Image (cartoon, rainbow, N blue to C red; front, side):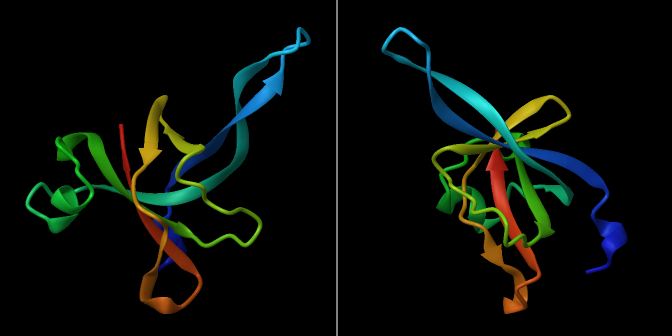
Length: 109
């Protein structure tokens, strides 16, 4: 895949517990990294929509980005921000063509 295909800027956030100073915790979203990605809509007729339990494919995106060794994607605590919209990561990042340079995942609003 050409580098020019990654033309959308995304932010990857992680939800973490932070002490509130009164003996409890509050949930805070922390920016993990920003990265360039290729974003496409999920085809409503694809198997992905039924396999992942996506009810509205119009609210889901297929995100392709370079594999980064400095971050580990956690489906439960991480989410993607793109154009002010929050997308939950629905599928584990798949290694495209087993070349260890590009990953692909499905995200949903």
